[in-house]
Image (cartoon, rainbow, N blue to C red; front, side, top):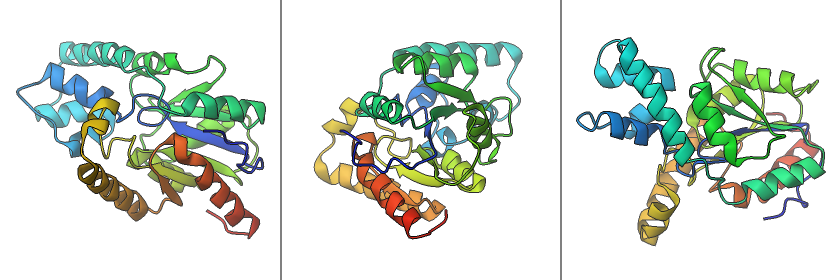
Length: 245
């Protein structure tokens, strides 16, 4: 996928890390929980919670210090295994760099796990961990990323993610938002598992995820980054007509 057709006038692009730039299906958190607590299967709603709240909810109590340590250690190990760029992400980032469009990733896992995941991405790409700010859907992390990028205006800033709470944070921050239906946690399938589904199953999951994202109020939805170009072009046209996020 080449993004040269995308309007160059975007001020900055922010990306979710898991289920967007890396870790197709956003499997790092649910796989960690499955490995540590096979006797407590976590449903999808649990893995869509803020990372720091998942363990207390799963256990039904405040985790002990040793449990938190094991959780964080396992997250980092799983993240290293899932540090694989999603289709289209490397080409997209290279295009954005050539166009001099500021961009960064956001994540809310413990910083060691986020850094492990981001190992598959270019060294120049800025990363913003949300662990020191209010959790999504508060807008703080989005604003902090723009501050770190030295972006001086919200106009023309876009957030791209498959994570509903991060997209809500982007909306709360006043950004344009593009939801990713297939590669994010709402479908939650690793690439091989996604391809192994028959077309009817994929279509059903994709439709449910797409509807859920539009219900959030996002401005556009596509499957994954390989299909981002038309969404950016559409947002560019909407901006030219004077529409605001």
